[in-house]
Image (cartoon, rainbow, N blue to C red; front, side, top):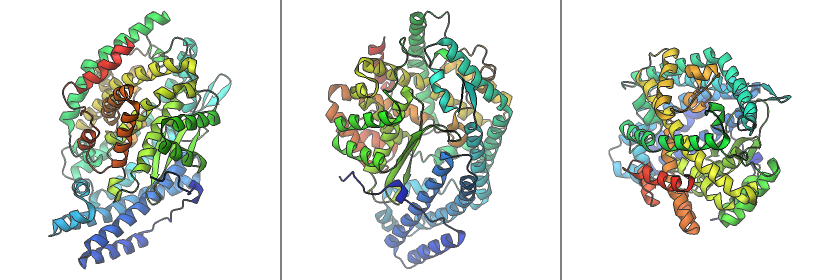
Length: 560
């Protein structure tokens, strides 16, 4: 496979679609369909969707790169108003094709898996909710802008939310405490606004679900995530497994840490510091880490190394933290050109390494599967996509010395394993919280906060917020953007982690074979549903009884 494209990010452009251009495109597609040219209609449909996806991704990326840019905000507003209109056209055509008398011809044109996905898609939209979808996007943008506006004075500097990371895991307990106090104060100051945004989103989503014939948003949310082969009951059992097998282990590890550090008790501001010598950090700054990443991928695999070089040299990485930049990190794709882009905020912590590997896993999958037929196959469901990203973090383990120095490499690997396990109860809590919220959409903000504190007692019973007033009052979930922007996209990480730990185990026995299996999985993209992709890679489904317990037990043998 050629993994060195000549295209640069600056070369990528996307025409802004209009209502007129959209109508022309779909008139032409429907005419082909009417003439019995099903394959040609499907091909043209695919091209239109790729073009809109590319334009949409570019528009969102430019806003995330500078949330204070008025032009970027205006472009995002136009996109948010336009996409529901495009979805109307798209859904209508999918309904026509699904209803065609010659089902075999449709399957031959787009594939059986795409047909199954489309059957989900037509159940998540009707023209009646166009305005609701636009409003949902506007509320999400409001949340992004508000959280990106964080400006905290600490250590003689003004930093944004991402810039607080080094202070939150500082070796000095007083520094960590002060950092969390300042963050908690910001979210406490804006708690009412954040509660209102979330309340509006919950009620809006519930209203859309009712208009579409669902009891509540849960069923609609699962369909929007394109979950074909599992449902809420399966997820609930997986959460139970986390509470049974991971929560007690994390409690033991925290007690072990408390004794090592000599604390009287573990507070919330202590949980991020894992290593008694201080969490290992990348050698050097942004440019040094990018160079170390190249050295790591050169060792790992020539195809991955060549692809990373094309990302780095082609301008497909935006990793420096700066004011007004959106929080977090993500990989986006430009379907018309087959190249991904990584957005992140480097702040000098081990999280920079995790982002470099995690988002590269997404990016490599997107590139490896770019030639699959049909836009529906380019990217899998998010629980499958997170296997690519989270497994890639573990494939970096043997090369950690390049990133943190050989003296700190073993400490980094242990810290990463602990953090990987520690996320599972938190992720389960966030998912369970959303299920309760959307099952009870009339809850008040105060009732939601009480629900969060109750669930924390189940999944993270050790958590003590001390004098962090907003978090202690049940507001600790508000910095988690997924809850606002991508409902039910949280258990995906926890499901994928079970699979990633299996790749980690296999890589310890035969690294080359495990990596080859991983690359083969990446090439399959979204050509099958989650459980089929898991099986194709020789992995055990997270839903299988004992699967999580076995994966966690192997890690526990190393850590305890």
